[in-house]
Amino acid sequence: MPTIDIFLPSDRNRVGQLFLRDGDGRELRGPWYVCGRANDFAASEHGNPTRSPLHLYGDTPTGDYRVRGILATGGGTAYDSKTFGQSGMIVLEPVRGQAAIANKNGRQVLVIHAGTPNPADKLLYATNGSVRMYEHELRELIKAVRGQSSVTCRISETNGTVSLPVTLDPAYDQGDPPLAANQMMAGGAKLIVCAASHSAGVRHRYRIMQQVRGFADHAGYSVRMLWGITSGVSFCRHDELFDAVPGVEIENVSYEEMTAIWRCSKTSTMSHKGETLRMLQPSEEPVDRFFSWDCDTAEALGKLATGNITPLHAKISPALQAQLDGYMQAHSMQNRLGIRVRVTERATDLRKPRRVKDELDAVLSSLRRISPQMPLFIATDSEYIQEGLLSHFIDARFLPKRFEQREQTGGYVQRTDKDAMLTFVKEVSCLCACKNIINYGGFLNETSVRYKFIREPYDGLMDAVRKP
Image (tube, rainbow, N blue to C red; front, side):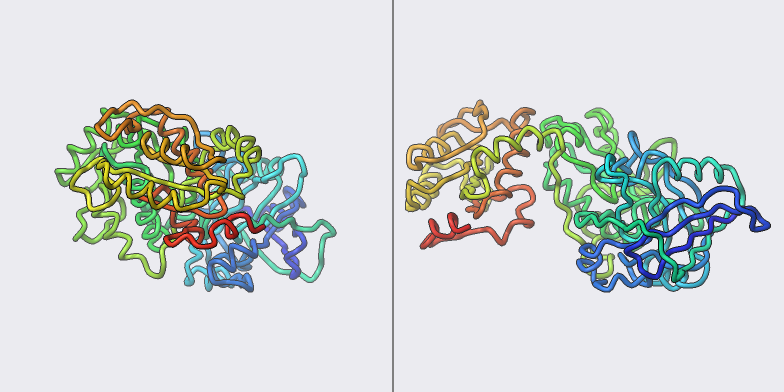
């Protein structure tokens, strides 16, 4: 019975060592360097500022574990190579010691993985409490234990240290336990498959993922979101618009597949990848594997989660952000006032402004009280609003778009225009980078920058925007 033997220093700022031993304790592989330190910022954000290994987001807990399995990582999986490496990850189930105590506090499993934000520097970066290895050494370890039965892992703490330090990555927050942890729970994988209607926009879909993931994190499920390539998102795939979502596997599905899912939503079951899943209703108790359709069930699941649900914000895809970086720097986006005006198309909508001239003129009248010298970034779906602002402000910037839907109050962006959707995602990134924001009608990720919002009266706005 092989054993993975890990020795971590009491000073977790230093790396430890890993050995693979046979049933008699003889060394088969190693020593290999490992990191067992948690990221300070994520630990503090999740209520564990001391990085206690007994609680979520703390350092790696010592104790005994058993290997539950090996999950694929990298391209084509839910676990990107920079975060988890390309060779796979080993999933460990707690048995005794600190591991068992931490298990009762929500750390149901531990993973051993690779990954680095900077492949060229060959450093071991802190995680959220997982064990991290170098890619080539993890590959060798996985090769050695794959197919073996009853593999155990023992993690101990020693006073000895290795000279190699652990490198911190302040931005790292991939969940504790990560999505992988929930895929190998005792008794079989617990899974929620979710989807939204054809017409559901990006904010609607991210709200569903937030609520479902919030419940899943507390109840030990993995989450798969079926992202319909439909009119609600201008027929864009998720990866065309956004980066991967931690804790959610996203699968792009065609319009025809979404139509079939919509029909199933009116029945009690649906077939997914050869498996019949129960179509959970908002009033029903969750089972181990089920389908959650649209917002009502997602909101009901969110209410079942204990504690606060972590807000989920859409992160622009690396390809789109790369297109923006030079533009944002050239126009000093961080020193501009962002103005967002979304004009709703439904005349009965209580949200304003609607496509009514008096309402549009009221918005422009209010904004024109701001000094024309104010450096501005404009994000609107209304040609009338954009031209009205450009005629007043001397230093205004905007991303070009087509206003092809003609109405009495001017041109508007077509909701099904794919180029317009790509532009909108870029606009959101620019708005969020602005010093302050005036918001009419809302936009994606607005809750993450609400502290920047400015409302009437706009007294002293020039100083507020230009102050470094």
